[in-house]
Length: 131
Image 1 (cartoon, helix red, strand yellow):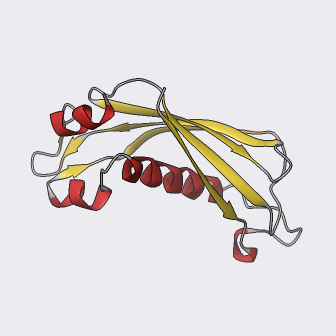
Image 2 (cartoon, helix red, strand yellow):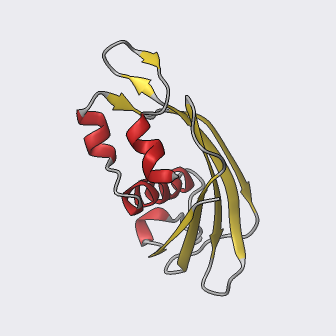
Image 3 (spheres, helix red, strand yellow):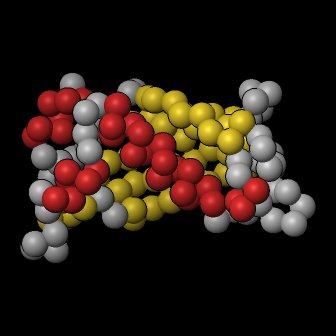
């Protein structure tokens, strides 16, 4: 479906003593991809929060294929799996500078009304931008 790519370099602080990216950092990479994906459609996570909408992660899945190393140039492709309802689901593919797959994954997030502290349907203005 709708996908966007970002490219970034692995920083030294993201690695362990062997120069391998620590597994916990991959969740942050996926977040970078989601925020850039939203931004590419003129959607701002900050504005959503200011309007009382949060998107907590309710599911995260990762499959590690190859180690990412310090100073690798990584490309993360973030794809929308389907038009959102109460949930929004993303798929990810992370490759290195040699076009080798480093990891694949997915996340599910839920639209949450901050004031009511309850799930809500995806706002219509977001759906319009995605159609």
